[in-house]
Image (tube, rainbow, N blue to C red; front, side, top):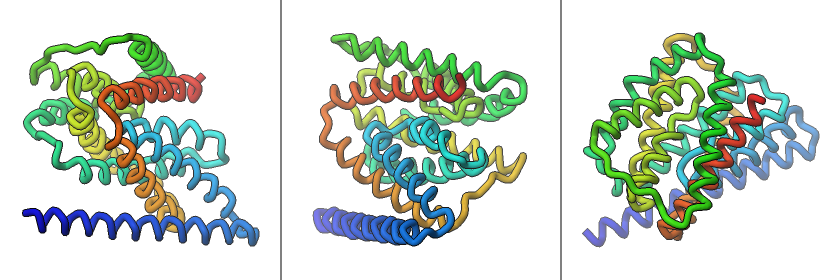
Length: 282
């Protein structure tokens, strides 16, 4: 058993080194292209920096990549479909990587009610896109997240609630609606996990795979109704290794945090995510 663990660790270290090498070579090649005046190289270099920074910060807490990256990408001259495609591909890559790294902590019996509730209501959230103002909903959600995050940062003690699978199912269902309507499935589930008195690993072992699952469900539904726009393959070749490297670094930071430090970062990121939602639509 000890030999197997050591083999897995060596493989992980080798893959991480390879990933870092590919990311550095990609950025170096892109920088050279930018210096040579190649068309589009400057924009891709900026996009790479944005998604790397957003991936690094969000991977420490395990959520809010799309909120952080989306707020920054909104200032670039990107077509909305291109920006959404970039965020979707990068976010799924980050979440999948994190779920693999946290696999030992995942308890499927605990996670199941959240997944079932969310999967049932993502279609409702997407359907509501055509009936309600996404801007108004997102601003309201953003204000709520800012208020809650700021309140928890100011408190000296944590809020701990007792719950049951039915309550977890309900929270998962709410997350499905917000995921379909505002592309933010993790908002309420992240808050709820923080209120359960769980350790940082227990929290991420729930909301991390939940977010990934909701993104995949939403992608499948959107693909069935209208083919999603795809970023250029050259962009993916640069962006995906970069965000995966950032995710690796972010998880390394996460491992060194105490439970209290992790919760403080989560609350701060909830505030930041809420602010970006409000700014985006105001």
